[in-house]
Image (cartoon, rainbow, N blue to C red; front, top):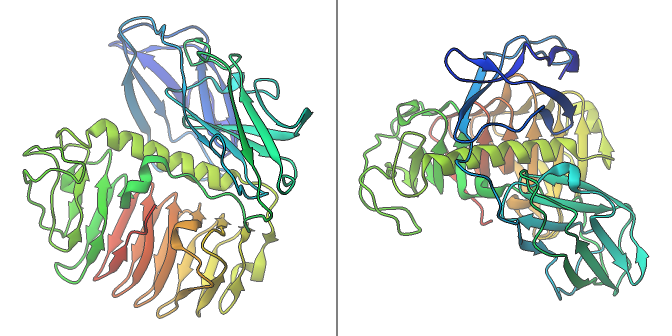
Length: 425
């Protein structure tokens, strides 16, 4: 984005009626724009954040429309100390890949500024490992500067110097030990989808099937913040069957003809997933998009000048400043643990009849297409895709197109007699 267009007039936080602006400062990085209030927010208060069409990208394209969202603050002071709820690699893990990062996931949102080289460390014996730290969602990630040493013990530590957003320190220092194996997983670390991993299709504005027959989805689909009325072509009917986790409600979700799974929308008010769960899933989708977009030091840059037709692609991080075309079959060759991330500044277009093929045991869950173009993704007639599509705009599958993967769109997903199968997490 053009950071000069992100100002106190184009990115506002207000409360009350009439709205009263909240004073604060802006920062901008590869993971987005952040507004930090000058003072703590008030308890038990509804706030509204708005980004206007005055915000532009670096090509001077304005935001398509004003974007607003609201949230309420807690009713009392937060005095609960955060805890670490999961670690990757976990304590005593063995055979860890040499190009692994180290993750710690917390019980609540943390203050990113408190994660430093002294509060999140990795050591080989007494020797500190150099690296960088990023905070995504509720997860802090330590990225070593170079690959770890084979068949070696490493100690990771997160100290009480890290705090939650209310200033509460971690309950106690957390230290764990893991052991590397002999090899590195090829390609970058996989993008973590968070709760968005639960859906074959997740969109913000619309999910449309342009035909009343022929589309088959294996997996759950969901839309938020748009309502169920923006899911069309599926003949939705509310039920009381509940979700796979066993919740029951007459307004929970909807089994749709041709969907082997459940259909959820922001205005379905059942026990699970609640509208708040869907808001979290959309937020996790955005975090995953920004994570994929922010990966640095690509293995391949501007490969084929954006035309990868007929190529065999090994695991790695690929980057284009343009769109990407697939006019003939493309093969992704690698093992079940290898990872591909494709950073595409423009649109992704797969021509009619073109196929993405997997060899060597490669899995669609480890393939990530991050597409930032102003139109989005178009999968041609009878074409086939593999992997997780993270699109800043729309995803369109034309007549008879198929795929093994997930369709995660910041706007709409449009289908036409398609078969989409969600891979295992």
